[in-house]
Length: 70
Image 1 (cartoon, rainbow, N blue to C red):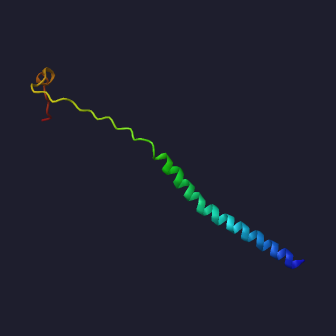
Image 2: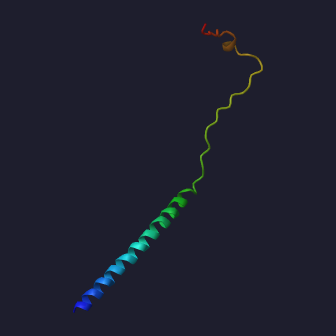
């Protein structure tokens, strides 16, 4: 009777240990697969402000007074 209890306890303990090892290995693998699945979306380009160069100075720049600290 005592041998049966010890063997049953060891069987349950080894089973829990195997399950814990499998879970510890599968969680990072599943997390990597889920993260790589999200990376398949196309990237949205950023907005770039490009102002055309003017050949003649504009009226606002010509009439602006620049103040410098003395």
